[in-house]
Length: 204
Length: 204
DNA sequence: ACCTGAACACCGTTCAAGT
DNA sequence: ACCTGAACACCGTTCAAGT
Image 1 (cartoon, each protein chain N blue to C red):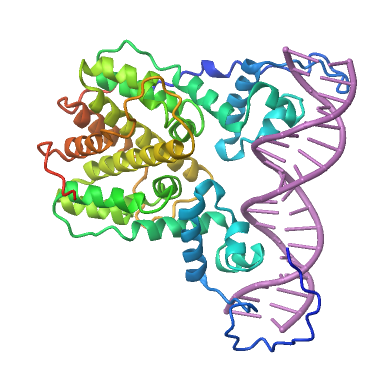
Image 2 (image 1 turned 30 degrees about the horizontal axis):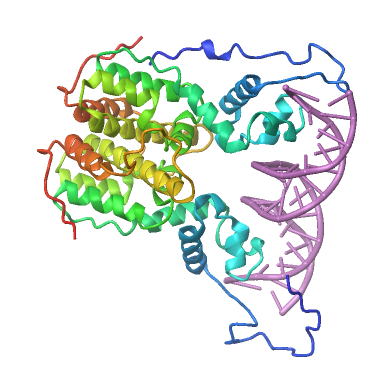
């Protein structure tokens, strides 16, 4: 790593700096979270380290702890941002369910991240609310079951995608592993929601 | 919920020979996996390191790589052992589903481990087969949806338990978070399986 | 066949100190 | 208010070498 020792000859007065090379690099909670979210999408959850995020921001790892108490808190913020995209007003359960799944799919390992960091406050989550309003009053148990199914399904599907992309499947029967996964999703959602199964997908 | 405690008879007093310097300590794949599984139950998935497993076996970390190519392979073996307990012959879907869930609950973070390491071969897993036979022929999509629900639900429930035990919930509404979780499980299973909802539980 | 010892390239986190 | 620098106690993994 390129270390410059002749610091004092350029003597940039670090006040309102504008050039991107000499970095006063003042960040806040939002810029850290945004960099981390972008990095998540590039490297995946397993390789998303505090040190890597810091490097991306041109900052020492310890600097992150000014903005977040620990890694878990940062991950929770990322989970919040991923689920924030879920629209809340839809009346069709299947539409709501698909939009939740697609929000999780929008970032690499998004489902796994939300599943593992979001467990505590799922009852009051954006996703749960959206599902409850789609299902109607007094259906919080159904909404919870639906959310558990969506998270399980999305996490499994995403793990499978990732495994396929950088290694061959170990299975003997090779009949396209991800095919029919959308059908499984629709079947599960319709069954738990208590609606009459198949409805055409709005695909391109 | 009928939990089998027969799991913990693997305490293995390893100081049968007391000399710490001259260590015969010969292990094989099975003894390593058993020690790792016991340690998982004690410390949880996040703290289950190769170095800790090695220490438990009175062995250098590098010794583990004689028996397993890497940590992922060892974790996959643990997932296999956890799901191996699932009985295959039950005709009642609800019974099968509960036995899968209970197998996951039998070890700390069992559901999360199986969910994250088992994604590839779930289609040919013990659990999938058991569900398919319970559901009858031509129901592999339903069985898959069921498995996704069970894994998502169990992982969430287990994460929630763990979070509660060593820290207070952050939620404002405090009406017992885990209550009703069994009802959610039964509701989801019955709906996806296509059976008529409630059936009495075999509780103690 | 199974393990040691030493190394390599990493982690998350803390904390005094700087600006 | 925000960051550096240095430390601490860890990681997974490799590999020559021992027995």
